[in-house]
Image (tube, rainbow, N blue to C red; front, side, top):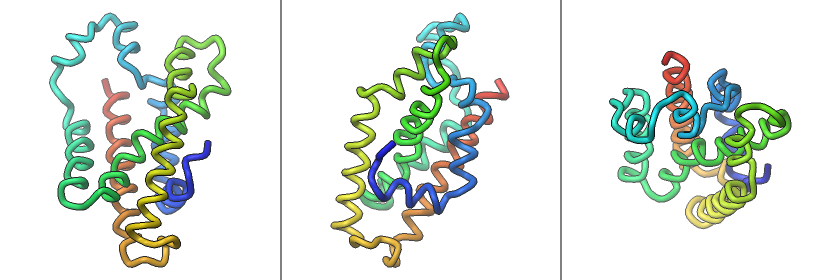
Length: 167
């Protein structure tokens, strides 16, 4: 996985929260796709008409608010755990996916059609950090806020996984 230099820095600062997200029991079952709902007998219409869980609303609104109240980097720090996190999860699980019922979903997130945009987004974030913050972002007074955005979005996504396991 090579999503640039900023993403690993954010992951390091978020520490246990990232581990809780990328190795959550929900993720280990790889229920990351609408196709899972179909396999359980739910149609796309059923899925999209279901009431939204508060955890999903909180995570989505947090990311939107990060972009509205901040700038491009605040938005990217909020989105990175979701997009790049799924890529990281897909790559890790791809090593153990052969023959599992989730192999097709894992292949989606580990495949080049998903991984290429992850690398491109990582490069986009790195370029924006270099231009808007500084080439050595950890020395910037803005860095802690961006790290907090990333960690909070990751923590909210962990809550989404918890809700997914609860049913």
